[in-house]
Amino acid sequence: MLFQTLVIASGSKGNSLLVQTETSAILLDAGVSMRRIQESLEKVGIPFSKLAAILVSHEHSDHTRSVGAISRKLKIPIFINRSTFAQCDWKLGRVDDRLAFFHTGSSFQIGDIIVEAFSSSHDAADSCNFVFYPESDSNRKLGVATDLGYPTQLSLVKLANTSTLVLESNHDEVMLMEGPYDWHLKQRIRSSQGHLSNSQAVGLVSAIMHPGLKNLVLAHLSEINNDPRLAHSTMETFLQSIRSEVNLIVAEQDKASGLIDI
Image (tube, rainbow, N blue to C red):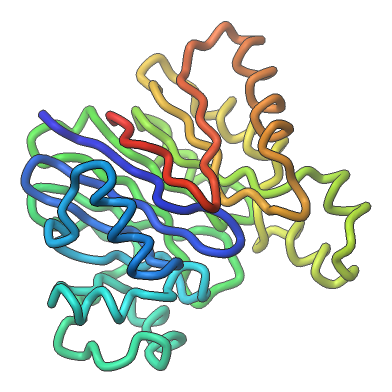
C-alpha cells in the first residue's frame, strides 16, 4: 500500500512535513507559508485539498506560521496538545471550532494513519515527537524526531523499529562554539533542551539501528552552525563503518525532499 512522506521544509527558518496513504494525508507542522506548502504538494501530484488534518509538535514559530491559515482555508482540524495551544493560540487565529486536543504519550488515528505522540526534550511547553504508521501495516513506521536536546530512553524505544526516520542533525559542535552566536544562545542550543548535534545524531542512530531501517533523513540543520555536506559526511562515515545501506538524505530549508516511500 501507499505510505509516503515528503519533507516540505526543514531548518531554522521553517519546518513542515507530509505523511500520506492512498486515502489520508497529514501535515506535521506548518512553519512556512501556506502558498509554499500548497505548491510543494501539487508539484508532486498531491492536491492541497487532500490534507485531512494538521498536527503541531510545539509552539515555536518555525513550526506554526501558517497552521491557522491552512486550517481555515481547508476547514480541517488542528491536532495539538493543550499546553502547546496555550502558548500559541494568538498565532493561530480563530480556530476554536477546529481544535482536536491530544495527550502527549497517547496514540490516536487520523483517517487510516495511526499517530503516536511522545515527549521530546526541548525548551517548549510540551514539545512532541511522533511515530506514524498505516492502520493496515504496523511494520512500516515513520519516526520524526526533531527539536530534541538529547535522545531520552523514551525516544530510543519509540524510534527503535521505524522503517524511515527523520532525525534532527542541527549543528556541528565546533562550528557552533566558534560561530557568531552569543554565549547564552550557544549554551541553549547545546543544552539538554536545545538541539541535537551531528555527532549526537550518530549516537542516536547507532542505538536504534536495525535491519528494517530503510531511509534516514537528516533534518532541522542550522544555516549558521552546520553544513549539509558535513552533516551528511558525519553520518555517512558511521553508516559505512557498520556496512549499512540505509538511504541517507539531507533535508533542505528551501527545497522539498521529494516523496519518500516509508
